Length: 328
Image (cartoon, rainbow, N blue to C red):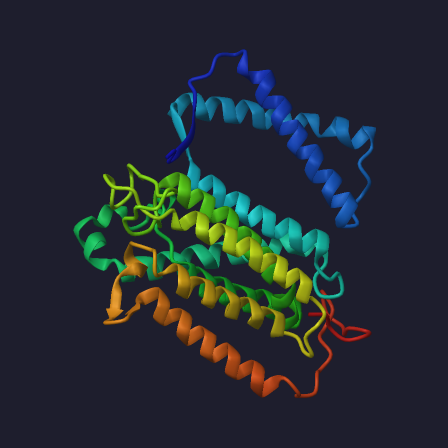
């Protein structure tokens, strides 16, 4: 596997134009997306020319920092986590209901949820594997090494989303419906990071596609590539959610469908999974399976109780009300 995606530096001066071109193109892409989906100013020749100055400044800063700390290791897991949040944000900005959240607000929401998710995911993971971290307290904050609980991350992201919805006067359940397909696609990308990092793999297996993860807990035998199972399952969930958009009677039900589908997925995948959440909590249930069962039951009960309840109109992005009722 490849826990370190790439190692940067030390660089010679010949790298300066390459760094500049990469940063400059990223700035132009951001401005184009902002104009295309966010209603910002159109990208023209003058704006493109003005972007060259901050790109040049950033180029010098990156060059000096990398050479000072070289070699700088870019971790696979952390890179995939960033890409996962980027994919979810792009989904929300491009294909989300503009009556619920406008494209410029998608990045703000992503930052809120990123912070909440990392805090929640790390707290739950450390709690589940406390014996190991009690012996190595210096690793408590090393989130770039992996070791985040999805259930904890989801809880942290939900709390952050509630705060964001309150501050922006947006109906939380309508917002959750728009976000959940992005969560599914982001989760799939994050599992690629787990695969490269060698964490979150499965139990030993003799199947033809079993793999050895040198950096994993079981580093000398072929095991289930549970990360890839989770990735493919999450892509299927994404497709189902896209198909179900607009087909539920009230806000929050699409998000409930995501939680239910994820819980079923996680329950089944825990059969093959090793690690902290794969440990038996009861004689016949792992920690992850118990959490999945609880979430599934709660979601099904809430959806059943609210299925025929009258729908209240959800506020628009930044305040106000939907004109024709919420989607999803």
